[in-house]
Image (cartoon, rainbow, N blue to C red; front, side, top):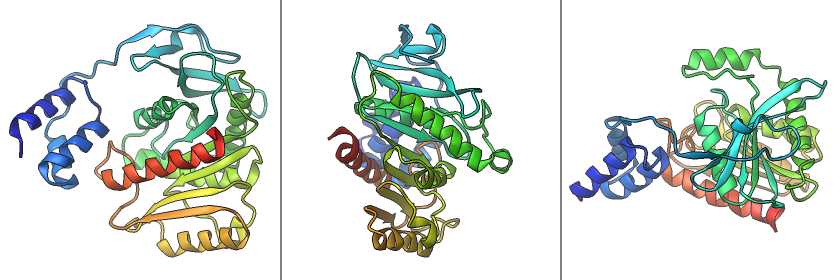
Length: 303
């Protein structure tokens, strides 16, 4: 093991030069595996939480928040809070990001885990923007973010799922109304609770070009026949909350109904294997899933 390189890596993470995902990817390569890298991460929490440098950007279209909520990041993305009308005319909010310039670009909805619209989901939103998409993550908890499982469980139980699907539909409509968005459909990707909502939205909304649930509760075979978009699903074989048999049954039903799908089940992966802020993170599975996601988005949105 290159101890000097590891020390430099730790220092880069602590001062905010690299994020968790990059740290774990690089550390895994030099310390002998993901488990050892995760232990190293736990021992070197950042000594500075200063945000990345930003400069003000102009508002970016109808319904955005005030100018100081939409910022050009150091990586050249416009990112920030956006406001848009809900199903009953109420004001909804979310976090969005897109490349600088006028576009147009294809668009993707990003749905939160049961924790809420936290930094992990915002990071995924920015990652998609870096790939050339307009990405919007609706704030389904209306500003609440959980850090403990009991808090998250309470927020999930209080969430009206059919109403959430309607709000997601409003986010879809808002994206499609922007002059810097290309096409008449969007992609949708979600994680955990958001993965289940991806599938529920795919039953109700015909403006989806592709639906990508990460470890979301699978549809029953009967429900699966009503899906309105191709489905790319990612699940962990060691997910104690989602039986693999139910996942496979959904995939078989989608195939029988003539709905294009790919269901990827990762051996040794638990629930939330994509979340690089949790001990459940599995870099190999997460990296593979990310590349498959980009391939499907390219096929159905960018191509």
